[in-house]
Length: 595
Image (cartoon, rainbow, N blue to C red; front, side):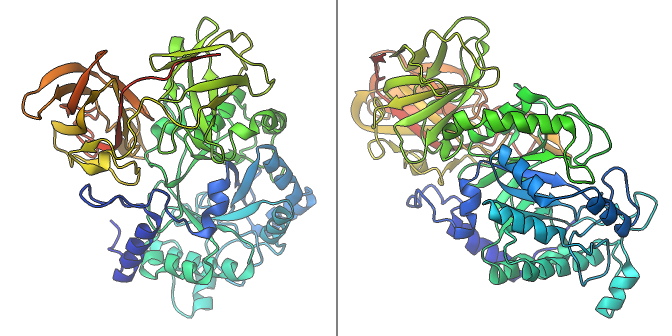
């Protein structure tokens, strides 16, 4: 169990969280700013779509047992930083994360270090990569580990406690967490000072020594331009939380369904591009599933999540043939649809947009919304319908004016009524992602605007996704909406907080489950005293906006949503009976159009 963080650290965390809008205000408090002001250092990540993850070190196959022989083979093999940068550009990556100082890759430091203790190269590999990346508009982030436990995995000791102790002037055991924490702490400062163009640190969990010595606070003071990312922990002082590879989803590429970080938090999904094997090259040219990896990329973009794709470089820096083949495919695949993946928000969440997820006849996909032109949305059909030439999507109040195939410009006929958009005559489905460019009217229709509907908990209707209602584990939960006077009511649009996966799962020993509405009833009243039930059902456990349609012709003043059960199982107490709701919209009609 980790020791408590220092008071200074906790104060810093609280201040940073408030500045970034990461903690939601109580429901009774006025709505927070709808667009939090983010630190300038986050601009690159917030504008990025993808990054390239490179695990590469002394134990990259064939394994080297000393630093000098590894460095010789790196140089003799022709390692060139421009190769990595050029390959990263094929997936339109904005940054490269270099994971060489890795617990299972020999704790290799690819820079000439004045600090003894583990493998350090004479050649400035890190400096060369930073320089090559900068020339072509990419950033480099350095991976840092907190973990000394693999120090003799290969039957040799990779951490030199004696040399480091002599350097420090006191005894330090690098094989302990405290000792390794001190060693790695010193390395943070060395590279910060040595490489002014190093963009940030990607940190594999935390080390108690770092916390006790206010490492992150000092990074903020010394290098306010650097970003901090943390693996599998949502630590507020970090700029971004990165989620390690998810499996078990349906469809298998839908990694966001297993992610538990809500917008607007900077979130990254890191995953291995090869189907099998380690995060690093193990001597085999592992197979790469093209469709799985293309659609992972699309799925993440459709959820405002960055894709950190791991490629397993060989000792000479080059990628195995099947990974090179995939990169070459992406080089040609992405440009025709790039406008739908970059400079966009994931649709169906806090930034608006139609409903993502499961559509008709087994089809599945995502919505992206242009950041600069809110009349432009993109429909990504990543799994086509099992039969037929149509796709039907819930329109979320957007009146459609025109639909074209983004790649070809071909115009499609469509019909829009009853809350559903039907795109007709689709016969040429892309094998990975059929992308429709959709032009909509500038103003949504059939949805009461913010300010008209009041709620028993103001956070539900304040239009602000940084505030939310929390039932604090108490079920049944009840939410009352007041339309101000008797008005039409056709549906409820519910955005639940995306702080849990959509299904029961266990990962890295952590049990998770969906904290979303399961059974529900809807009742109405004209006086808030006498209620009539008008709808009961089960809400699917899925990301993005969900709809509850009400009986046709309904007019009422008050609407009450009662939730007796959620999807979380009692065996997963952290999510059992927990319910958080960002917003509930009340619709009074649907746009109708044809094209």
